[in-house]
Image: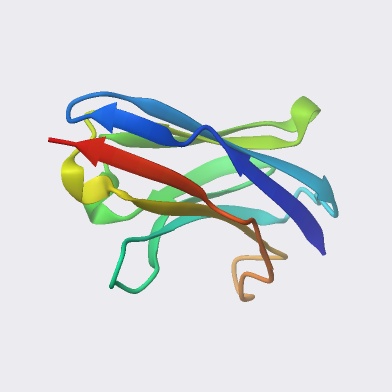
Length: 119
């Protein structure tokens, strides 16, 4: 398994930006897929973005395309989520997750970091 620790959440005004970080330790194979998810109060957890440690194709939820960017620093074993043009509806707890491949389920999760966007 992978141990994941998120950071970088906070309070920001609408239109602002935040960068979340997810530090990984343990298994970090090049084939591993790293994902960001979020869960707002009273709502189900939803997919935000994902990419492999090896780079290549990135995937995003439609509502985040053009505003959010996922990236990684292999030397630091850290995945980032750059969030721009934030909206109040982006308020949620953001989680980092990991899985072995595109075809498996996410099996490691971080503790989450709160993002609050004020209007």
